[in-house]
Image (tube, rainbow, N blue to C red; front, side):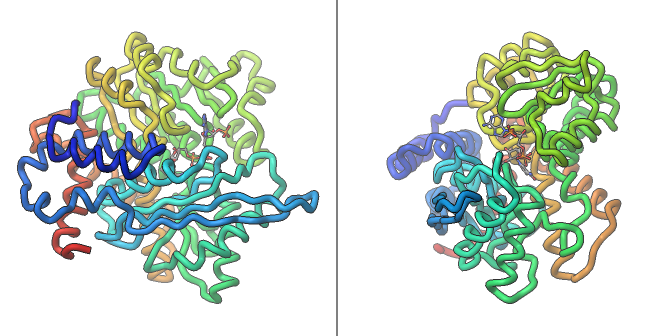
Length: 448
Ligand code: NDP
């Protein structure tokens, strides 16, 4: 979809000038603006209120030094980020990414996407994101703890249970959240729900670990059903082998699909018999090993170096669950040629704009990240509710609420797409539905 609306095209130019060297952020804004063109036509009041200009500018962004001492006694320095993008509908909410590729532009793209995603969940959460270029891989527990403590020593000045509630993301799992929560509590001398994804013994929610992967499959199942299809008997390829990929594999398998491939940033495994998930959980969640170790115990499975080859495996449904821009035009064309009929995104922005065009041209059902992977933040929202109530709900209660939220998210995307004349375009539907709720709140609250 080209950006032909002059008002939005001019505004995009301003965004590009104001944010040079942030290609991922520009990519995310461009995609949203393309979808919002019919909204500009239909809602001059939102243009009048300056909502579009305001929504692309973070309310606040913090960058800070994170010094820590490694196991050899040497001082290391990383850079920390927290971008508080939009608080129109609730406290800022969004994960903390720990990965060497992290920079301000990546955190801004993630924070921008988070505004619309959080709005779609139906829960009162604003959009934010943070992280650091620290790489937890290959570090000892002690090093990870010292980094997390130093990171939180600064971050704790900017967050709070009613202000900004970070969560996990790439590289930030239960271990890192635990260390950060401990440091926050120690410095602020208060026990509050300031982070989500916490351990179950100190305020975490059951089903949070499973939420993004399960939610992705709940959303995908609705999308398939609405188009007369299902997971049953289908071959599925999933990239990544982290939190999202593991629980997407679990739920897709429960729905009767066969997941045949997983990956990490070094390469991918292909197991024609279906992935042995217990083995992957042991390797990844317990031993923190590389995915290639899988073939040591599964000699009929194959390991291939490099990530993008995973999209050459013939499949019916593809669920990218690793990282941004992992499916480019070429990979999307191979998926289409091999008969893949649905792509739903567990990772944030895993498809390039050219790949999305290929899906659309080939009639591939496309579930965009901000809708399809919203189950993680939705369940974080449920963790916040439990913390406020000082109660813990059962796994079944949380899972049922998550399931209903994902059904509602699919319905909003579907109906917004229909209302704005783009039936079946769930990307446009997600952008429009997510935007409108935030835009109404911004308009109501005046020029702030
Ligand atoms: P994890 O750190 O648990 O796992 C990430 C997986 O992706 C690992 O297998 C990792 O491989 C792989 N990966 C990371 N970076 C790259 C890269 N540059 N190239 C290829 N593979 C890579 O993270 P999550 O599973 O939590 O997150 C995965 C995606 O889902 C991210 O886009 C995240 O933003 C998104 N997401 C996560 C949510 C959550 O609740 N956790 C919620 C919503 C979205 P390796 O181990 O080699 O680094």
